[in-house]
Image (cartoon, rainbow, N blue to C red; front, side, top):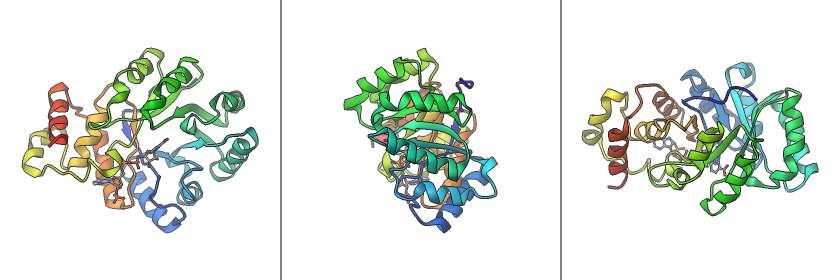
Length: 258
Ligand SMILES: NC(=O)c1ccc[n+]([C@@H]2O[C@H](COP(=O)([O-])OP(=O)(O)OC[C@H]3O[C@@H](n4cnc5c(N)ncnc54)[C@H](OP(=O)(O)O)[C@@H]3O)[C@@H](O)[C@H]2O)c1
């Protein structure tokens, strides 16, 4: 297993953003890479996003780390997804079982691929707290290096069991939906209220939300998605210290509840 920590860093999500639009993918991914992001999360579930990402990484593959997924009910389908991923990316830095789908079935061949060096780390994901017990069971096998889960001031269920478990087992944590799928990001409390966070390098509300998640020491990577290159740059800027302490995190929570 590679060293556990991936971060703390900001990456880029790709759900419902560029799909098959390779020009837009090139712009958004290019902006994120230029701003210092490395990790880009995608999935066979996200329409043509995987293919667009491969086009966006052409001639600069070494600057990005691909976190993609196997989303397949059968071995045959899963292996076919993986075959395409190797064609697109040559190597998968983080391969995740998407939404726990047939995870026991896929683990063995994925471990074989990791041992052969074609996959860097193995992860498992789910977005729904009603199946977090199963996500915890998958983590307890000790066979996953990373877990992806939702975490933002409006979605904190993972604090109960999954984050402590990830820390105990040394599993890296990837945060999906750090902006609450855009809902929290849209409720900007305004510059006057954000001024108190300026010493932490925070200029915008989205940066406050991203830094809130990254300042939890158990979190490695947040993967906000955007269709806008300027927002990819804005989000990337939240990925460096100083981190928030407990008081500032509570302040962001208060702002999020306004
Ligand atoms: N494994 C799973 O089950 C699962 C589930 C959900 C998500 N994910 C992964 O996690 C990633 C992130 O989650 P998500 O896409 O659902 O939600 P998110 O990243 O929390 O929010 C994305 C939304 O926020 C907006 N946004 C981005 N940057 C912003 C900024 N600086 N200011 C204001 N608004 C901003 C985007 O709109 P604009 O395009 O207009 O900027 C978009 O609508 C996904 O893309 C995907 O890679 C995985």
